Length: 67
Image (cartoon, rainbow, N blue to C red; front, side, top):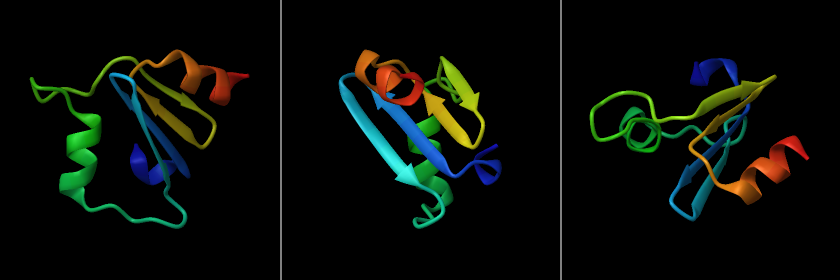
């Protein structure tokens, strides 16, 4: 799924990580730490809007992406 998007937004608590996948190429281990929860499943909620992948919930991040 990550190969199909250009922007990645990940919320972990109040921290938001934004990665421009056109410019940055994080390694597999980094992506797994960001996208997978403690059980090894994709963190929820996970949404895709066009070429943007949004993982986790943080109200300000949602306002930025969907506002």
